[in-house]
Image 1 (tube, helix red, strand yellow):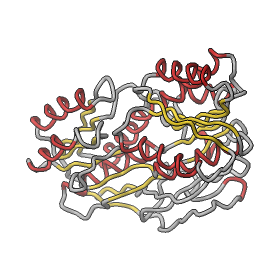
Image 2 (cartoon, rainbow, N blue to C red; image 1 turned 90 degrees about the vertical axis):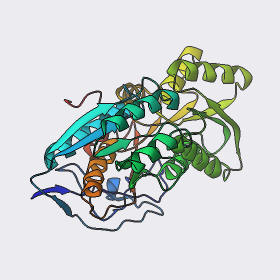
Image 3 (cartoon, rainbow, N blue to C red; image 1 turned 135 degrees about the vertical axis):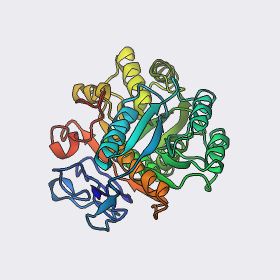
Length: 360
């Protein structure tokens, strides 16, 4: 029998930049890579307001004689978030053993590109599919068909609206991340000013929730004017154009919440192009290498980092349990960490920076 650590986490909480807290609540156990501190510990002894933690470290045991075919369909290829998730998928598959792994993904985050990939994967009849659906509605039909054909479906990061799809759903607490981003941005701009959101596209479960969490929380600050959301189509160049156009219409813009990796990259570029980097504060979501460089350079002031490695690792565990007919965890929320220039050198923070490849 092979044993692997359970790496689950859920989050409820609020982050302050002056007292960074790393959040996590066990979905029954620890989520950390070997050698790290238990999740739910807080930087510099600070208390995470509203945080709930529960569960103890545990292990899952798998048979030694597995012979399974698993396909991981990324949300989009080339995104360091999904590369980091793939690293977790690979490690879990190797540690469990007896798993043949295939990784595919569309060239853009677009259900019209991802669905044909899903059709091809379903035709190959793997035992299980890990997938980050590109659309809450349009992605449902092929995934339902996969389930109807006896393929176990595990949703990682993004989901579909049909709750009957997915033996397990593993993702960050995206609403909570949006709340944390609002509080962080409010603190950065001194509780007053004009702010906006640069999002990807409507209809993506994760970024929709981040926007919703941000909007609801920023409304609690009476001296902050929220001027709305613009969509970048997951293109950094488009995000940069949005920021420069918004600055022309709103030269008093104080802050930006960018809901994913490419939106944050492009927003920072737009401020540089406009010559106002440092004057307009950015809180980004995700932490790819380019974003980390922007944080270090002062072009971005804070990054809300997910834990894609853990999402992928746990996705494989839940997929194997589902194939074996064992009990799965229907919903797992992984924690997140807020990185700033002040704490980015802390190993408990920078261990969560995303990877450009799994050899790093």
